[in-house]
Image (cartoon, rainbow, N blue to C red; front, side, top):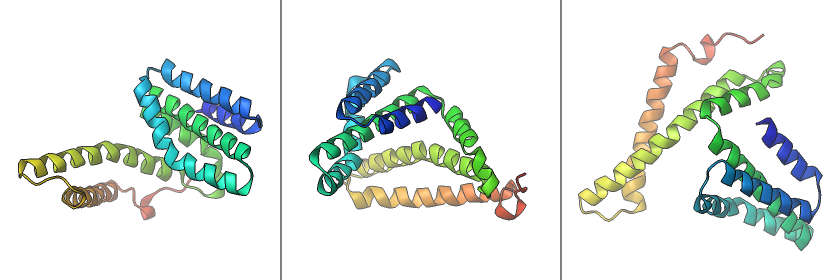
Length: 185
């Protein structure tokens, strides 16, 4: 995580199109080095366009085409760098690093343990939602119903809410509710 932070800071400080292109190349190379397939890297960059295209258009409208290109390339390089870190680091290590990085926020009253718990729960919920979506799609096909948004999203939403309620009850049963958390030093 510190390496990623330094990479993003370097992208921001080195304010040139050439530096942005080099940073994008380094991030893409890092993705390849950690074992990502070329197809996965390209797909990730295409998904990043959901963010970079609006940023590009806003920067073009407010500044210039060159500034828009540089900003979009910087953002894509940062996303690719984050992708390399995330795909090469265990999830528990990422959460521990984030918790350590948020340490100074404790002084101003931020409950970093609660944030870490929330991130860990969210991280574990994503594969469960994917499995639920696959099960809903398979169930619709088994009943001869062509999969569509209503047929899939309704059971996924209901199961997600049920899971959230169950997790909330488990947290409450373990005494991790707001009233029972010990104050931080």
